[in-house]
Amino acid sequence: MTTKTTETLATAEAAATGITPTSTRSPHPTTEGAHATTGNPPDDHAYVHGYSPAEARRLGDQADTLAELLHAGTAYPPGSRVLEAGCGVGAQTVHLLASSPGAELTAADLSADSLGQARARVAAQAPGARVTWHHGDLHELPFADDSFDHLFVCFVLEHLADPSAALAALRRVLRPGGTITVIEGDHGSTLFHPDSAAARATVDHLVRLQADAGGDALLGRRLHPLLADVGFRDVAVRPLTVSVDDSRPALVEGFTRRTFVAMVESVRADALAAGLTTAAAFDRGVADLRRTAEEGGTFHYTFFKAVGVNP
Image 1 (cartoon, rainbow, N blue to C red):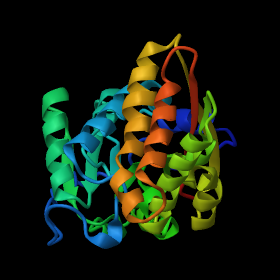
Image 2: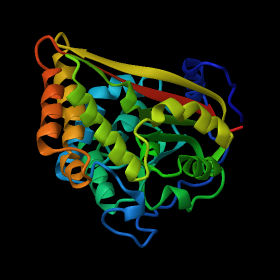
Image 3: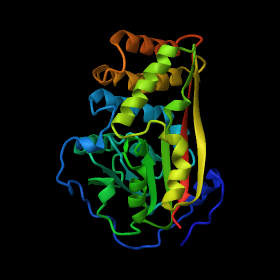
Image 4: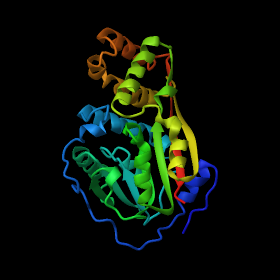
C-alpha cells in the first residue's frame, strides 16, 4: 500500500496515521548489544552536550516541555512498525508511545548507557509498552529492507558529520509509501530581549563547538533539501516556534532556563579549552541569557519538523 501524498505537512502527517503495514513478518528480534561497543559512543560520533546526568535531565525537561508542540500531528496506527533512530535516554520515546499506544516501536541508539536510561524511563512512565531496543549505529542497521512503516528522528542529524548518509541508511529500512518524520532545531533562529552581544556570542560558541565535533547546530533550515536529495518525496517542512515571555511561566522554566540556557552552560569548559572565549565573557553571556527569563524578558526559538514519503 502506498500513501496518498500532498504538498502540505499537516496533510502528510494526517495521511501517515492512515497507513497500514503491508508485511505480516513477525516483530523485529531484539538486537540490543548487536554491536560490540558498550558505554558511550566512540569519538567519531561526538555528542557536544555530553552524557552527564544533568544532560539526561535537560533532555527530559526539553521533551516534556515541548511535547505538545513537537509531537502534534504525529501518531501511528496500531500494528504499524516504527523505528525511532537515535532514541537517546528515551525522552521522546515516552511521548511517541503516548501518542501511538498500539504501534510496534523499535528504539535504537549508539550509546548503551543511554539505552539503559531509556528502558528505565519507559518502564517508569509507560509500563507494559511494546518496545524493542536496539544498540548499534544507525548507519549499519541490521534490519532487512522495508522493515518499517514509519521512521522518527528527533535531534539526531544535527550531531552527524554526514546526515545525508544517515538518511540514506534509514531510507533503506523504510517500506515504499512509508513516512519519515525529522525534527531539528536551528540555533541561528534564537532571538531574545533584552538583546545582548555577549549572549549571542556565547550561543555562537556552542554552534562552533558543534561544528568542530562534526555536527551542525543550524541544520533545521536544511531539512527540505536534505530529505529531497536522498530521495524522499512530498517533503513538507513546518517551523515550530517557541515564544516565551513572563505570561508563560511553564515555558520560562521548562524551556528558557532548563532547556536552552542549561544547554549553553554545559559547554563552558569546552569553550574555554578551545580558546573561544574567556571565563568572564562566557559567564556574562550566560547571565544575559538568564536575564531573558526574568520579568520583562522574552525568548524565541524555532524548531523545524519535516515529513517525507519513501516513494
